[in-house]
Image 1 (cartoon, each protein chain N blue to C red):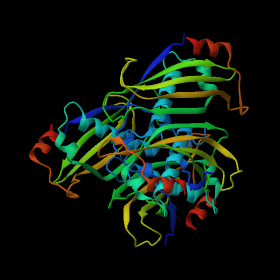
Image 2 (image 1 turned 120 degrees about the horizontal axis):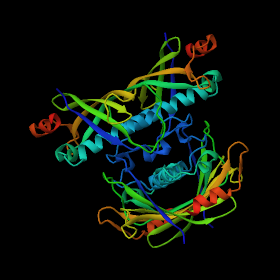
Image 3 (image 1 turned 135 degrees about the vertical axis):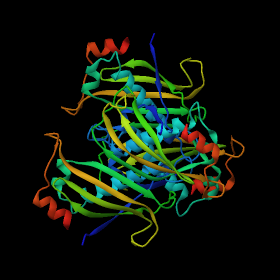
Length: 134
Length: 134
Length: 134
Length: 134
């Protein structure tokens, strides 16, 4: 059963748009930041990081308005499928680290492992898979 | 058969990320900008604008890397479904105004007509529908 | 002698530009965020917040490249002058909460208290001044 | 007498902040974009571009609120001083290409020619100077 990673991400005042809500585009920025903190954090497996990851698909459904505040939101990342070169991640933007707290938005990201030197996707290594399944 | 709207949107140097590509998050900003220009442009039907529209769903698949350049990209917007309060729009980010030109990313946005005064979705009016179907 | 406020601000991966540095424009976003956290934080004096503040002048000199990292930078804010309607703030972006740590950029912001209802600057009240001098 | 370059830059709906103004931070993004279009445009001298330019100082004074609109603003760039490795540029964000039109913000940028390979400033070449003075 897949493990979920709960990553706090701080909002910025400038994330709100003219409507006084955290802008819908910014939610994808929050997901990017959560991935960066997960992949480059204390337990990072740096092969994934140093060799490059591209976003191939991104989708979100917005459930509730989010407003700027001091406390971070918590982005829940759950790896649901590991393909030859791709990684599917379910994403939820939550009010706090309780998975039953308000979910402002939920969706899915598909990453592709990419080699910038050869400019081509690359197969995930056994070490990559082991780290992703941890 | 639905009409497509071809909206030029200018890139910014700052849209590129560390990888030297227009960042995946920024593509949703390009879609937002295309919608803003379509909805607030010369032929605008201002009821839609002044009474508010929220993004309920957003999804993109990335097909080819996009780099900063002087010439605008062209965002193709096609209204595919008009619900009671919702509008589904197919979106493509194209190299130029030829619909067969390189498609950097394609996806779908669902908007919901929203009344900020009552803080609730509102039914699209006959005038809204007429404008959306034009 | 003016008090300095040390405000941690988290970086985002997307703050880096094509050159692999936190982009110079983003530093002004970090200053904005530090001001927002100072003014809206636990000890906030909400008159200042609710009645509006505009940036009238902004200036930074960049001293050292800043790279994305997990740990926040610390923005030091020092109120140096309180005018009839204006507030001058010296700003430094530091490596950590030691004021002698690496200073990535330093500069100055002039804010003007503004009343959005009357669309005019407003005089700072005695309560505003007291809070600013604390 | 220095030449001024008038560079149209398009706004984005997302440039407005919660206050319904183009955000003060975004003005520095507009300046960056104007520089990019000037330096990489049709008459570009690519030595400057390919070998790197860093922003060393940036300052703006805000004179009038700017709102999102279809028409681009015009950024006026005037090279006022060329040092050994530095370039001082007066910047104004104008309503249109008439230099007497509304000036939303004005200020100054100091760029430094930088060699990313040696990670050090580099002396501007005679060809650089000739292009900058044109």
